[in-house]
Length: 141
Image 1 (cartoon, helix red, strand yellow):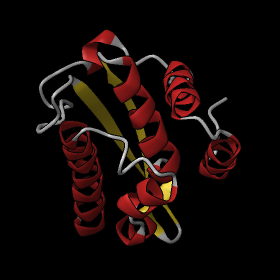
Image 2 (cartoon, rainbow, N blue to C red):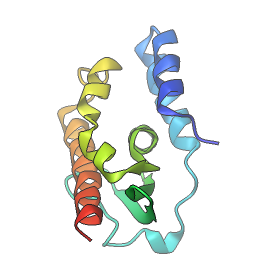
Image 3 (cartoon, rainbow, N blue to C red):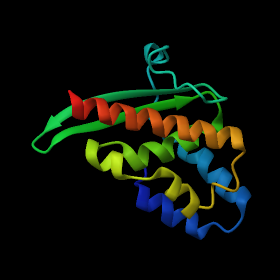
């Protein structure tokens, strides 16, 4: 079972060394459910990531409106960990909550902002923007 965002934040707090944090990110990536091969398609591909990243979105209607579930994958270990982190933050949440949640704030809290290359930071922004786009689309539907 995937770690919750609160568990991830707590675990990061215990790790002082950045090598340990990177290893933990890679471990998070290994906990992702495998994305079926047919989901590695152009429609799911996230633009703006240096590594290959795929995000699959499904929307379910609940009493309060749309709830979005995400699955993702990457061809790079550290990026797969970042995908797991972003999914822990957003997957299974109602669309308005997704739009109100600032992933970059979480990345600053975890200290990731200053430890990621600009290219990886841009990739994370692209993933988050894609998730926010899907949340807006679900609300509009």
